[in-house]
Amino acid sequence: MEWLIGGGPIMIPLLICSVLALAVIIERTINLRRNKILRPEIIQTIESIRSYEDIPFAISKCEVIPGPFSNLLRRILINNHLSREEKFVDIQAAGRQETKTLEKRLLVLEVITAVAPLLGLLGTVLGLENIFGIISELGLGQAKAFSGGLAEAIRTTVLGLFIAIPSLVAYSYFDKKVDTFTLEMEEYSMQLLNKLYPSENTGKK
Image 1: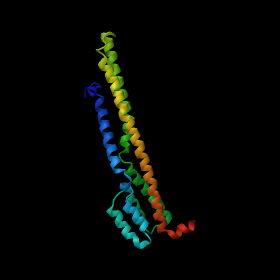
Image 2: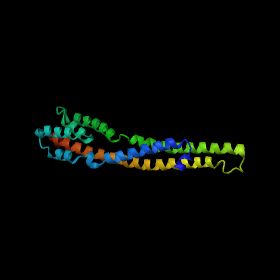
Image 3: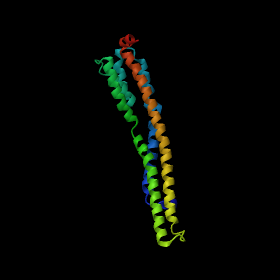
Image 4: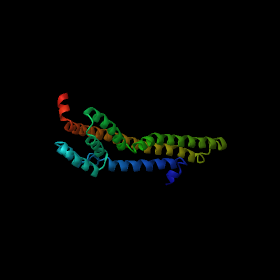
């Protein structure tokens, strides 16, 4: 605690950043699990569709099990009056929308990754300013007098980097995970689209 207090007022926003980063990392770790996004029940429902008669059951399944994947598949299953090309454009728009849902709160990590080192640098500048102010008043012989400013300069930089580095690693990991889920969702969407428009799909081959 004494180490934190010795870092000066910049320690307060840095601590806030650390709490926010930790909260986002925990929340995304829990909610970005594969079996929570690509629900096995929904995948089985897709694979079990054989004809248009199976669509009402599949829609009801998607409504019972909410989530980005279910929302996207439900979008494919409704509005069956659309042509394959119109449906393809429609699910592309829906896919982008659902991807944003998966990416929520990652912006917080991205911002913290950029802001934490800057806050640390600001603390360093303020600490050095205190040191130079003390030197101008007391001279270089009073080492103990400006040790507080030196501690402030070092500690804020250390804490800023200590927050930014794990935040950057976590952001990169979750961003990659979202990309992977998005690709898998697209694959299943195309699989379902081919089932709904088998003749058009065959004609294109």
